[in-house]
Length: 189
Image (tube, rainbow, N blue to C red; front, side, top):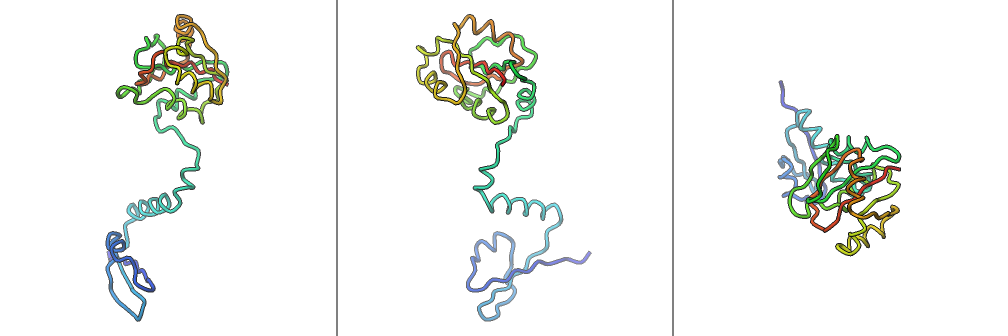
């Protein structure tokens, strides 16, 4: 199979360092025109380069795209939460009840936190309200205030009632959150 070449022409002095990193080799100078060549990539390389160039070409456009969950288990669990059903997002110390679906995302203390998980799943899960333990107001006032400022209505129950209600959730996402009484029940909208 005969080798195929790509050619690149540049007027004025080009960025030789960048072109070299991209595999271009200088083959001719004609006045102020620089001519480079490089072997044409195989299809897999070409697709990869095109995808990279598209991704790097318009970073702002890619950041504006709706985020999608990367974890397939979390995405599947989110799709199971229907109108009026609940999803438990638990901190690292909550005694998770025996639920059909439990996903443990905890890595270390506060990685991830419950607010981080809520922010990640919010675009994919319509929420009617959040249910919190009322003890959170005294034990974690910053977290309490953060939930109150959020776009979703908040209800509070005594912690023991919260634990009883959590047993009726569709599933649970366990986090590494270390804030006291950080647990949240999300009611699907």
